[in-house]
Length: 430
Image 1 (cartoon, rainbow, N blue to C red):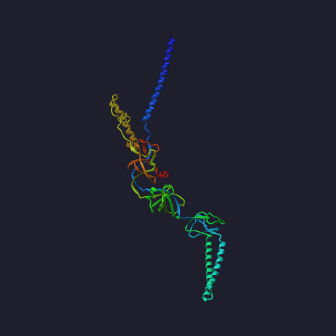
Image 2 (cartoon, rainbow, N blue to C red):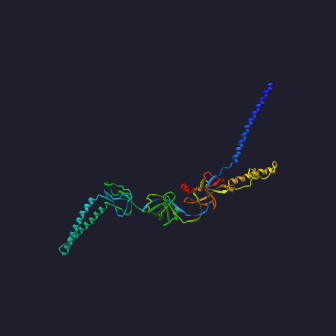
Image 3 (cartoon, rainbow, N blue to C red):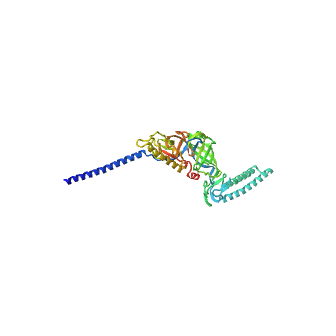
C-alpha cells in the first residue's frame, strides 16, 4: 500500500514537471513572438542618404535635336574618261591638291604621235591656203582651188584640237582644291572608262543633312544657328541652316534639313555621325531639374520632394538619465525623483564640457521625410528636363539615390556628390 502511494506521488510529480516545462516553452514562444511583432511594428528604418537640388527658375534655351550625317560641300570620287594603262601616279594619300593639278597620267604615246602627225598636216594645209590666197590675189587662181585649200586647212586644225582633247583625257586633273584619299589604282594597271581612282574632298566647309518631324517644321528657318557634336554631350561646332526641303516625306513624315559648318581644323569628316541641335530663342523663368531626378513608371512620371516631418503632441516618455521627469510619483518622493534628474543634468554638463566641438543644436535638426509628387515633364536640354506641373520654386527635390525610396521615408541629405558631373571631375574638386 505504501509503495502504491509512492508511485502515485512520483507520477504526479512527473506530470507536474512536464506541465511546467510545456507551459514554460509555450509561454516563452508566445512572449517571443509577441516581442518580435512589437519590435517590427515600432521599428523605424534608418534614414537613406540622398542628393538634392533646390528648384528655382532658370534661363532656358530650347532647341530641336536630331541626328545628322556629315558630307563635304564639294566632294567627288574621281574617275578616268578613257581607257589606258596607268603610267604615273602623281599624288599620295591625304595630300592637299590645288585646282587642275595632274593626279594620274595614262600611257599616251599613240595619241601623242597622232597629234604630231596631224599638226604637220595642219601646217602643210595652212601653207597651201596661203598660196591659194596669193594666186587668187594675182588673178591666176580659181575660187574652187581657194575653197578647197581653206576647207583642208580648217579640217586639219579641227583634227589637231580633237587629238589634243584625246591627249588631255589621258590625264586625270583635280576639279577643285581639296584633300585626296587613298589611291585605288596601281602602276601598270589597265583602267576602263569610269573606273574610280581616288576621292577628293574639300574639308574646309562641311554640310550636315538631318531630318525632323513635320510638327517642328514651323520652328525652323533659313540662316538659323545650329550646334554640332560628335559625342559626349558637347557641341563645339556652330553652323547655319542653308536649305529646307519643301516636301515632307509621306512615308516617314520627316523633313530634310541641310546646314553648313566651318571646319578649319579638319575635325569633321564626310560620312560622320553627328548630333545636331537647332537653337531657338531663349526663355526665362523655366522650372527645370536634372534628368536623374525624374522617375518614370506605369502610373506616370514623379519626383521625390524632401520636406520636414510633421510633429504631433505625444505623451512624454518615462524619464531617462539626463532628462527632467514630468512630475513626482506617489511611490517616490519628490526629492528622490529630483536626485537622478540632477545627476543626469550634471552628467550632461560634463559631457558637453568634454566634447566642445559637438554643436549644441545638433539634436534640434528637424527630421526629413520624402513626398512622392507626380509631375508633367516637358522639353529636355543639356541634362536638364523642364517640369510643367507638380513642383514650385523652393522645393527640395532628390536627384540621386532614389532607387529604393518610398513615400514617407526618412532621409538624410548629402550634396557632396553631384550626379550631373563626371566622377573624376568631382574627385579633383574635393
